[in-house]
Image (cartoon, rainbow, N blue to C red):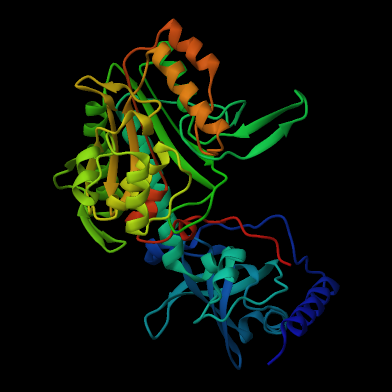
Length: 480
């Protein structure tokens, strides 16, 4: 079997020969009249056509060549006969390879085996490939190669292409859902002087013109969209990239897409109702079902959503009351449970205990009544000042959406920012940065508002794949 280097050298020779014979192997234009799916859908009524695409196979039988042509819309067999093409048949047979892009002119016909095909009367080279495609039946098998040469994996794997079509529909369904309910799509900055809207480690870069360090955003414009509420907008949303300089896992990456909406004169209860509607619509329109099985859990997005009290759930599973237990008691329980946790401050201890408990929740469920210490941007619960009006959508043992009755008391917000700053100064890298200009906006006044966000991790859960596999081109380390 020829090596990759030998195959490449042979194809370069074919390339040069095509040039010598007056054929441009990389023309800018094609005279295509139809895409393949159009021909297949209206085959009986189609006469002569010009098609363009990549050759996915070649089968030579004396004076005949059969090939599968793929243009991204579909695949069709093309048939070349030596007695009809004469010299151009020989050129094709000698210098065209699997993986090349060609234009074919011909007439539709059905073979004796009943296969829709094109009898070729002329052809033209569009792109000469210098490297072979992976073997058809096995494709790419090495996981790193599959990501590094994603274009080949997508070319050879129709199920993978279908997943990304679903992902596009996932976001389009979300966009349509929001706009149909009167939300205005907006764009907010991705470079920020202070990060806000989440607790995460940001990526830092330098702004040469201003000579200042800035951060890639860690939320989809939460503090900006709240400014729009103050500006008089009633409903806004944004779908966009966010960046978190943290570890990777089957459920976490450093760059991913999220959606956030902000809804003036609404509270977290309104947000919960809208979330149920949105998730159900995504399930039906994208997947054609509401029942899913993923990560060892089963749930029905069309069924009843349970409400879980944060404090009571942790207490029931671990025996720890996160409002009254000492830091020492919480630390001892985490050690006893074998839970890895970062940091020793109370916020991290509380969050780590809950993360242990959530693994037992199938969902769909809403986690509510979060302690104030883990919810620096959420409005205080009217019945208990230690809790907040916050909700998280729990599916398959994980938090897949987050919403609040947004805090709009500027004095309380400033106090909570100061608490977060103390944590940040003490070494908690994911604590929230203070934003004095945001507090200034609140002093001008922001109406009661519900804020909510979820990301492409929901899609990864619904297709039951690690989030890395649901990104077209996940970040790869450079080759050594």
